[in-house]
Image (cartoon, rainbow over all chains, first blue to last red; front, top):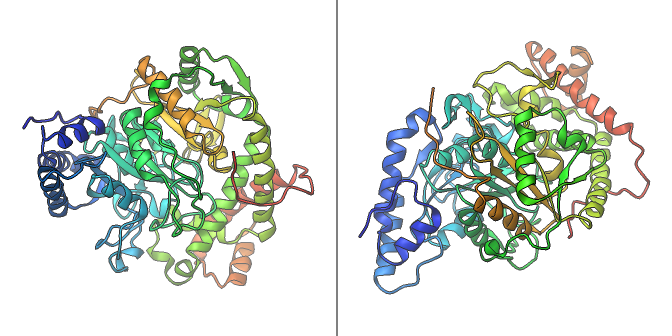
Length: 468
Length: 56
């Protein structure tokens, strides 16, 4: 038996465990040890399931030792945002109120899918309350700290999921994304994050935030790791009414295919404004490496963002209206008044936003007949300090600091398009992501482009070493 | 949007909002109404129908 490095990838771990060069138990014990030593400073985890994880790992070792087939994720430790149901654990969704709920009776579909593939669940991760935020500055459970600089936010709402992977505590995690909640923390923490097409991955057993916009997806430190996890997560599920009845489209096998034949564009207009130069330069670096020069304009993208805000606020407030009426004092002060304002939105505004969504989706469909993948910044700037003021200046314009983090991610989740945030290599003091976007159910194109960028050294996600 | 407006709207929903929070809710709600105004200024064709179904 050999010992794997702490920063071993998903693929390295699964290969070592399958071939019995390493035991799943040793891999999981090492992950639990890292979490025990480092998470107090980072605050990624809200629960660590140590005994259960070790028992699962031993079961996998016994199965492989007995000649059983190792899954593609055999022995890979993973953790999930605490809005995924875990059998026997109360699902918090970042709230105090849900602490009173009984433990979940079964795993969420996405958790079950990774476990079926041999991965070992080691714990639950911090988030903005009910996923309403881009920062993971959670009043009940404390802020998650950015592994690259402990004085800064990890991004959100899946902040614990991004930070745990960036810090090397686990090589794989799950999050959810309504307006950017996978891609924003992936960018700020310097890891890969995939928001699949709406309906591609089942949300059964996930606490929804704004149901018509909610997605779930993985975080990892390499394109290959992200792809193998995405393979395991896909597939139809009657338990999620919006889950697409499409066969899985495995992506791990396409990474060597290169980008020949893919038409790659650079999003202009809205996606090239109100961003710091470093964020725009990250896109240009990726574009140069890919030989992409075509500028693509998505009309009315700024209005798409306004429409996404109205739909999100309205649906989210509706989901929590009973508790807002009965026990508003138990909400996080950072979300409470935003939920209440959302409850007041007239139905006509909500419906107009949904109609605009249909129009914008049609425009995007037309554009994606001409290009296969579009590049944009993921976030307009790197991670701000924890507790920063409510506004900041970007390109000479005052903007809401926290809300502006989603300025480039919201228009895509609004219309369900798959989007992958890839961390630019050597970005300077803090990480920044490049966002790759494709037509619905064309995740394969995203993976081919991301793999090429990774191969050329343009994007990379080394384990973070904290400052601060 | 005044605090009194917020109080009246919230009452229609049966949503109590304590007096000290009404100004904050009014400010956020004003932002949402601004977003709705930006959306209303765009002339949508009659055939733009809401349908959260996504096809290639």
